[in-house]
Image (cartoon, rainbow over all chains, first blue to last red; front, side, top):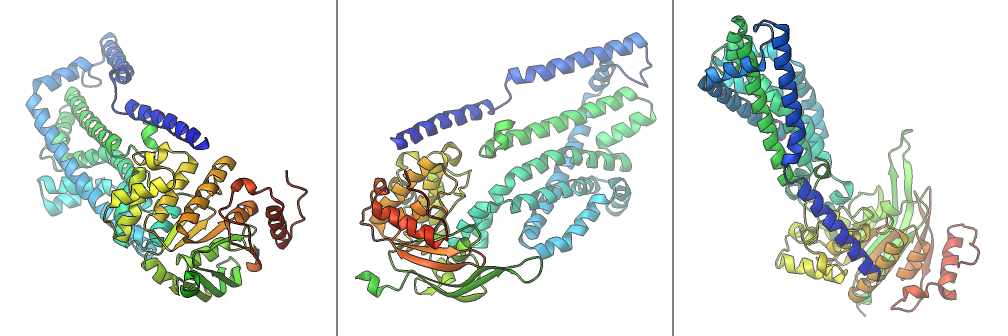
Length: 278
Length: 265
């Protein structure tokens, strides 16, 4: 009798769970509508304000002027955007990858954590602006210094999150693994890595815009291509519309990458509490 | 009888353990504990919070290295018993992996012990034995607390261990789930006769389940009584109102230094 009750309640819970899963399966049109309307209202208000007040284009360009700047040189913005995107993604891969590998080491030994953490902190507190010229001197023009700077800027968030994630293992589960004499490798793959995934994904979401900033700052300093170069030239020409257009391209790239990570998150982390909220 | 030939499941002698404390002297958790659990015997540890019940259980499970004393498990060291995969562990927190199905949570044991022939079939068999046969494909999040604890029990039994260590396994459950799980555990144990060391706060639970109840005192943890429960088996959980049953409950209360409760309803 009580068993039947339990089963019944589990079924009720189960259908509840599938409902939440279905709800979070992807952003529906209805969910996209409010932000789209808000953006549209903002653009119209901006356009109207610029036309009514007759602010010159080189101070605040109207959205229509920004769109014209984009449409006038589509291939220029596309190739620059692609270049910055690849540098950012390359930097994210190198930075987050190195950070995760180091986190594995630090999560397994308090002594190594104490030894390496100050060094990692040093990487974090050093302003990218200060290091970028040095890396450009060392590695010249081309993609390498940009990737390295993007890597440098994404390194710390991933390190801190991954160490926390790899350690955030329920003691009761760890006891079960130990009572079965599980090897460190088994504990790592079956327990620590899956437990760390919510933290790793959170770090990726923080790191995506950071990696773009890193790549663009490096481009801006070396001045040999990418969105950073467009910003540099537009700035010196008082071509504010192109400057805003470059920012729009960056924003589109960042939003697309973040949406991609959110999509992967829903696929991989359905079991985590955060899946029910987002 | 097998019990005469087989070494005791647990043989603890002169066990003492301290935890580090701010004043440097160490907090004495256990002081000169002796305990034996025969092969196939069900023994409960009862005592107030902080009497070292859990410390004792962890020492037996090889999860903690005690400072002094000898811990023999199945005739060898605790670590050897652990390496031989002879131990099943159930704690208050079921500690299931939320990203695995119920069946895969049970199969985890077979995966970790490397004894994974017919993994799925054996996992489903273990789930049948705890009454969760239909729930193999569910996720832990979709189950009630009592059902999750049954999954933990199946996970601890699927590799057919010789010794089951249970640390307040029903402590976080509501009264009704607790009763259901006691009945289930009685049924499983009476069929499989695995040796059990069962830590609990509940005196009635201990009397209902056990062959022997070992009563401990707190600070420092010592054994103050070792009471054999001579109630007939198979036990009927509804018989826990019999005068014999209540006499045992009374005896344990006295050993704990409690004023006997007024007649239980």
